[in-house]
Image (cartoon, rainbow, N blue to C red):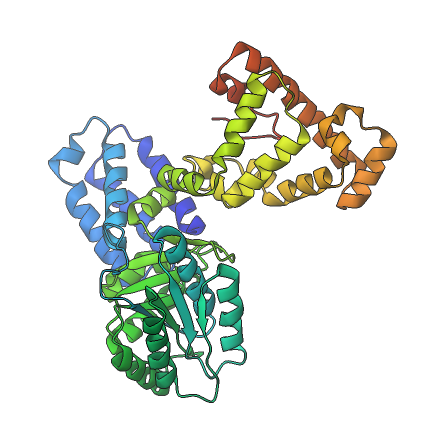
Length: 457
């Protein structure tokens, strides 16, 4: 998310770090560059103006001007202001009321609302250990109810059946009653979207809100729409007592303007952001972490949390014990590691949270793509169990079969085998001399993700 804004602000930061001292003149130059970056990223003009006025007021102060490293102090001011404008801290859902806690979802058609209902249900089930019932009061969009039913099955939560001939208010109240009868913790109600804001839609959702009195009224908005996202959110906020916002499609090439504008324009917190199409691709929104990502400082906390949730610790421990005993690291082990990477959002999902990723040359970034991981996994899957255990025994006829089975080329199979055998030897050598960090440093450039290998550091 925010690649566009991140790239432009990083250019400004690079110039700042080269400044021996700051003067009012070069502060003005820096603020002008930041202003251009914000407006190009589709940040609303009033938000950009407030942002810059606040930084300027602090930047010309004695502490910055007389600092030994004024450029770094100004960078911290930019970071802190980004955090402040996006909401200062993560704001959680209000789940302490008498069950069932009711969550009403609102938004325009095409914003990803129905998918977000399923994502949120899964998040509540996995992270908050809540039982969840989902229901659809969208009687207008063809197959909307069936779509939610399918999604509910995929995340293993209760689905309340409804029909396009029913009144949306009646569906909502019946769903809440069903949750009470089944002693379910949370009800999430999907409502109808429209292609644009209209009075009929607002009247209907107000009626639903009045009938069920939800603890949370969340507005789901497509982050790709930039300033429009913020203004649409304001229109809904004027009509409904919103308690928070969920930004969707933040994994796309969003300019980043929505995240910076919405909180300031609506006064309502962003509580979650959708980071992909899969049902597990929903993250709580942490302004400080996103600000760090935008400024190229990485987001190690989120990466660690994802590792805690998604990595198979017993599998990892088993592999370490195996290597310590001097047994060979084989292609089955390597495939297991690829699956762990997929579980954490793929190689780019991981890399996007590491500091300095924006400074990597584009040709190196191109090597670090998940398509190559998929190809590698396909090649390994096309091998026999014996070939995975003893890849050095694979001959040309077998390579042709593996290439044909995986939809790749013999050259790709050769590259995988060559780089893997190098890595295998290195791991064997390092297991004797000891030290995982030594092993990782020695493996740099040997990982078969592409011709350039992993980036330095």
